[in-house]
Image (cartoon, rainbow, N blue to C red; front, side, top):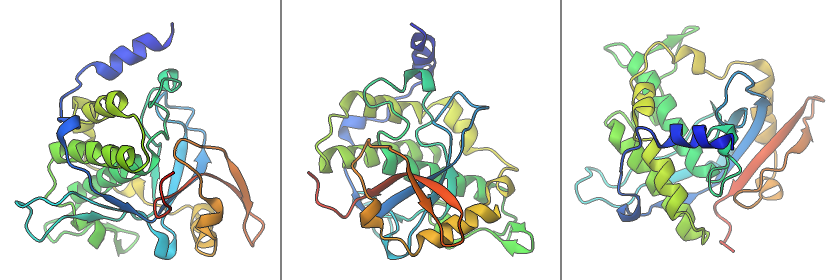
Length: 255
């Protein structure tokens, strides 16, 4: 079976983050994701996607209350960025819980933290990284300045466990596997990467138009349940067509 070597690859270097013991946090808002490329050069993920924060329905995840955390629990609110969903080998995505969007909102939070970290890695002594005359280091990025690599893996476990609790999902096996992989050496290398921030910026004019168009959309009308990744074609006011593949509304009552 072709997926076995990839599954072995997934398990190699897997570290324990105590998935079954981490506390749950709180999701609010919506995760709107647009397909922007096939990602043919990679065997991971399910293509290239653009996460779009939509006005007052932006996705937020508030971490569990921790008495040792100064200033109270951290709320993470991703800005527009590119993601491949769960970086799961395509050959094993048919397995339960290993679809690239099985835990879509959790993957958006985790991927955003890595984008923020890479830009912080490239910042100068004044906490700035200038691209086209603009400092791209934002307040949202600065929120995770004190986050360590292991914290990012714990965050992955927290977000998946929160979805599992709120939406009655059996995620014990896949959640532990995914969060364990994110604590491994490949993820650590990505966490420490440098000279990548500039390439992560959303500057494509077509993609900027998509972001602008979605600000006037009713996210509730696009929303779907976790795991449902049907593409929905939308025509912008200027005639540009694009495909929304996920619009998870975390403010709706769980079914």
